[in-house]
Length: 171
Image (cartoon, rainbow, N blue to C red; front, side, top):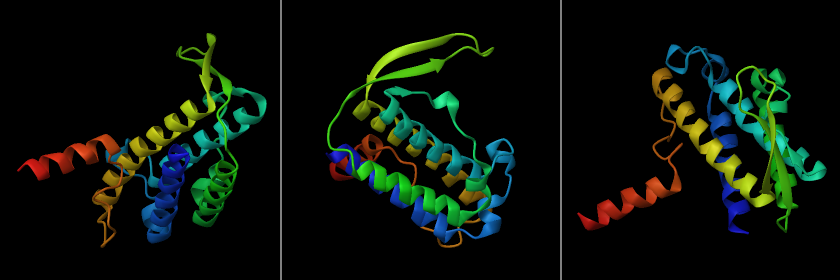
């Protein structure tokens, strides 16, 4: 399925980027990211995929139940190993299935909802979510000084890339 292929490509791009960054770039807390860091956004992306993979086994996906594993944040090798594990699990997926999304959209945390969804829909969500956070990572890299890291397409949604390409062709 192409959706999984694009998800795998996105995760590989993230891994390649992590390997291009030095520890200071990966770890620095940036005002422009509200005091967050590139590493925090990497962890966030990976934990959404991890929740999805757990949900694929239990039939209930709950992104609110993220582990918030700070080891992923402090060790670039661990982050890359986590990506490798997620990629391996995604490669095993060959069919869609029904899932339920458990979510609490309240700020006080007492209003769980169960929403019908599917595995492929949630893979699409994780991919879109990753692209969004990679756009934030791109901002962080620009502030730090990209030092030759090719980031022009990082965090650009496929529909936006197609739109830009169409505009170039028309002009």
